[in-house]
Image (tube, rainbow, N blue to C red; front, side):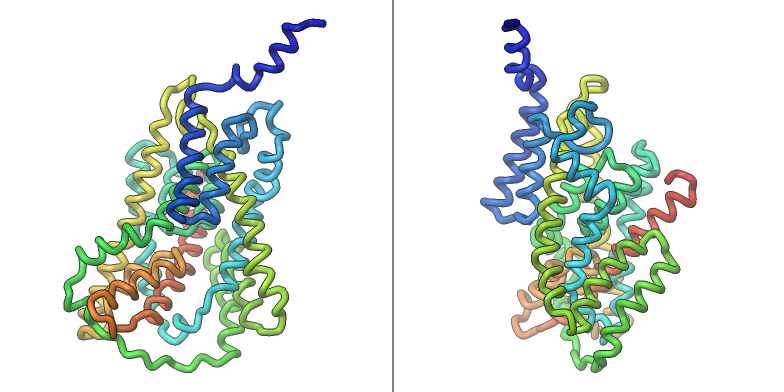
Length: 389
């Protein structure tokens, strides 16, 4: 018996383990701690953290991994649900079933705030290009500013799959930090008088037929204007139609629970499994991966610029309307539904407990959800139109 071969196989895992893998194991543990102890996006950060640990003990996922590791179960899940874009789309079906578009339909002007809340995406794209990222990478970094995990993953998978790990972690981490990041910006950019503005709420009655037709019309229009956004908008509106039709209760419950939960679990695991030490931290051939820190920093900048742009546009609407529109609702023109809408409403109540702007904020927030999907599609069209996709 050749004991040297036996010893080699027994120590195979340890011999391939590096200090960088050890650091990434700690990163995975930190993500798990944030999910369990701090309850920060636990549904996603927990499986991402576990996937990160798996990736660094011999079960990586993604492109460019050694041939002998490509058939591990994490990579099979990655190819089945991330490479095909299936998981983000299934999640969007569930998100669509949770959204009520009535506040937006009764206040169509909120669409303007949803558009303003995407400004940081394109500003950050230009900055990323200036810092040396190529067009595909810059677009993937910019879309973090939408604060919409499925959209960020969908766009990045198509344009820069090698950056999927840091982009996904940034998108979901910043989404969970909305209650921490946005309030100081709101206070800095608005006056107390503006935060005290009361908004009359006499909603236009929305007929059931309009609520049912809305997802169908939006799918057709957006798909014609931005074809690359068609899969995202179609899945989001499919979920909404299932809910609003009122005739498929079992499907409605399934997409809001089992389907979105299973998809989120597998998406988190497979995204986490792309966070290998060589891609995320240290590559022996090129040294430290400084690009990871740049991605996280630029993603945060995109989020901040989107919030600022939404608030400034909200202030403009406030002035033009004669102080009839509270500019705080501009901050939730990003996605991060429904957390951003609730934070804007809470900020108004912190100044005056009897000031209720929640329905207005939700109108802006649902507009931001639509805006983030359209922005993702326009980014894909931009990159392809310039010959980079």
